[in-house]
Length: 353
Image (cartoon, rainbow, N blue to C red; front, side):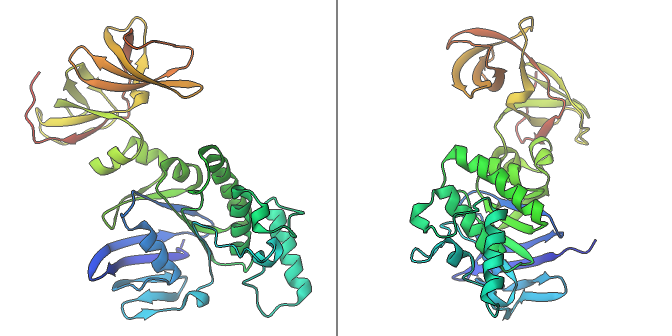
């Protein structure tokens, strides 16, 4: 399948400093992809380059067979047939919802424009809201209007820049699922920029984790969590701690808490010093377990409780218990290691047990 959008080896600069370098990605028709990373990693710069708001100093951006950007050439934003949803929604306060949605429509009859507006209101679940003004809407409703406006011209790709960052956590999670369902229901191709991994996991078919202007890993949410490509991705995605260890066989690491065997075979030499990543779901409660942890912190999360446990060696690990396993600070609890998806990285420190 030929990708709908191709970004190949682009470079973007700010004041002669490379903000993005040698970055490539592709998006197939109907897919939703996310650029995920911390502030300053270059993700919004990539989105703005795709939208035509930033030039590229190297590489190429293509939509189908049409070149949108290359070194020395930038197709104007309004000629790209891309929809854009901005972080602040950018709704016009003096226009009602219908007028906001229809703002970008040109050379159409009033009846056709009215029909599109009504269709878009139905798509985003705001039927009957057409005569309201932005200040009469909640944050979530304003976000839906911004999405409807971006969808109205029937663009080839929708670009969303931190679309949920102004909303509270509960609404952000719910709306990200709603937006995914809307886009999938319409067969819309989309690129979403976010710093929130939960958002990216909820909405993206594929996710590109960015750091210092480059994509560190382009993968599914499952693989990013269980098979991170490098230390940065492992640190940025999910929660966890690293334990020092040595490789005793391709799939077994000796640590201060004993041998840990997983599903991945490493090609490092026997005895190599490694850092083993343990996620909260790798540490399971086990009343009869020989391994004991002392509760030094806890965070109630509804159905689960995140415990920070101190081992007899002094190291700390995180563990997610079902919430009916209620323990107090200072309690000692039995645990076991279930790190089937073993993730480790070579270390420069020599460790022996």
